[in-house]
Amino acid sequence: MWADRDLGDLSYTVFDTETTGLDPTGGDEIISVGAVRVVNRRLLRNESFERLVDPQRRVPAGSTAVHGITSAMLAGQPTIDVVLPAFARYAADTVLVGHNVGFDMQFLRLAEPRTRRARFAQPVLDTLLLDAALHPTTTSTRSRRSPDASVWPCWAGTPRSATPW
Image (cartoon, rainbow, N blue to C red; front, top):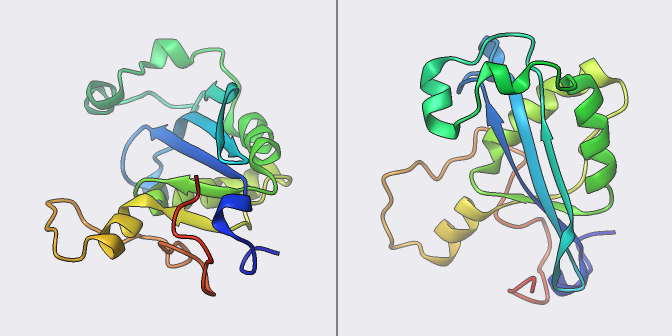
């Protein structure tokens, strides 16, 4: 379904998460999911996905300093078991795209069992890894390794177009 199609013919969900911290296996949780779709090489500005998530724990001050989201802002918001299935429906049949997206995917995949409905089995494109592939001599202070081995700068096969839009 995916490998034989031109990159320009695919639909994309470009997304990011915010979290309570950097350790998904140590109890940190997703507190925000934001996304936009790209279909037919056009950004669908009116079809964005923006949800705050109650993590059922406090947001550390250090995390709030990074993203500006406070525990008070999350009080009364839906929990991940409600938000994640909605995001999975929004992103269905699209390639997921993110910067250092292995981080986000690890959080999403660890939350999947709590929802019983959300699954993210589609291809994932990491713009950080794509940048490293396109600019191999450029050095960066940020790691170019994805913590999720299933995330690649492109999927198996030879794409017929180098630019999705």
